[in-house]
Image (spheres, rainbow, N blue to C red):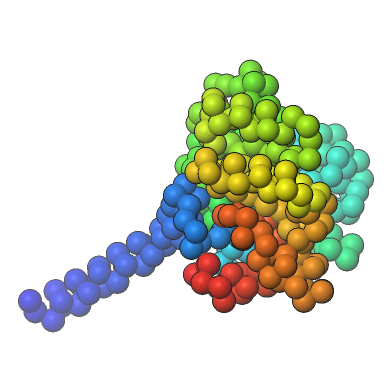
Length: 302
């Protein structure tokens, strides 16, 4: 092989390697999501990196990608002209320089406002659409839609358009029968994660309904205490082979094993460690950098 051919071949190999590497993050994350093991815990960042960029912004999501987060949580609303945009509240008052409801504005009108930082200051960022988010996240990170069940079918259309159907998790705190009745035609097309409040009397009944009819890849479990009954239900879900998703955002969601206990009270083993001990494969946090570091030290995250 002459020098020119050898150089061309090496360049091809390098470019091929780069291309393959670019595909690896989402492949690795998706495999861990669908084939959970005891040696891996996925980190979900609540409203993306809202401490360092406006919540539900493209920059907040870019930050999560850069830090090695596995999944970002977002919220959706629909504009007057039918676009799905990222917004948590019923109004844009808190998070933007505008006032009123998202559905009272067209997308072009919403673009005239600027997102506010976590401290309430105006930034240069604008409200993104779900399509823009999925294009940004494609092949890089998974997406968890929290407030967005009302747009189930619209979301599915966007995921199909962007080729990201396997990267997005839709969820709702509803029984299987209702979800099936309302969204049965797209339920099998997307990843759906039921949210179960383990403190409610019908929690086990709802769990059984999903286990019998859908066999979800993951369940989001919410509980205000860590009683024996709560732990029994967590174990029941774990034994089904499904991934367990637990929020460490604040005490009422995880029986007191929350982020602030880990960070401010310096008790990470009593908070994040306890959650891991329950078999959780996904932890949603407001402290993604610190949780990643903790899990890496425990050999539970690359």
